[in-house]
Length: 181
Image 1 (cartoon, helix red, strand yellow):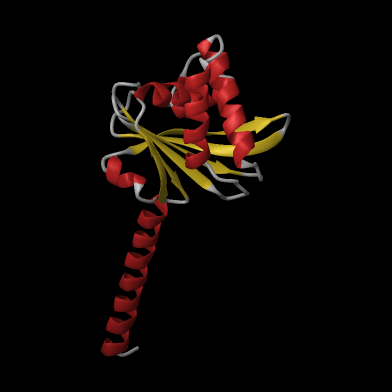
Image 2 (cartoon, rainbow, N blue to C red):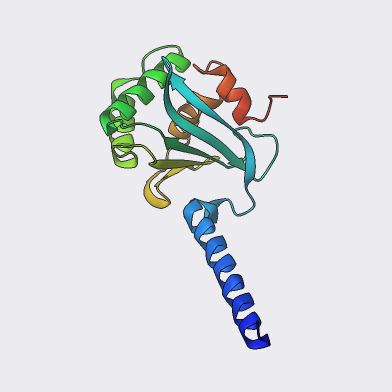
C-alpha cells in the first residue's frame, strides 16, 4: 500500500468514525440539550404477563436521582400500543400511586396534555420524558420535541409511575435508580 493510499484509508476511517459518533449523538435527540452532563444511571426492561413492553433508561447529571434535580426517562417500546392506551394507563397509574381520584378539571387537563405528548408507538419507538424541577417536563419522540408541559405537579405525578416507592414494578425502579448490586 502506498503512503497516499494509506493516508486516504486513515482519513476515510476517521471520517467514518466521526460520522458514527455524530449519528449516535443525534440518535439521543434534542433532550440532551436540556441535560448536557447527563449520564446513564440505570436501565431495565418492563414486561407485562411475560410480554416485553419497553426498555427504560434513566439519565441524570447527578448519581442520586430525585425530584430536586432534572433527569430524563427514555422508554424504547417493544410492541405496538395506541396513544389512548398510553394516556389511559398513565392516568390509572397516577391515580393508583396518588391513592385516589384526581379532580375532574385536573384529569381533563392532564389527559389533553398527554394526548399531545404521546403518539401511537410500535417496536422501536422511543419516547423520552425530561423532568425539570419546578417547571414541568418535555417529551421527545424519536429524538424530536413533541410537547412541553409547564405543570410541575403533573411532572412529578407522571414520573412517579416509575420512581415512586409505590411503583407497579419495584425491580425496574431499583434498576433505573442504580440500586441493583
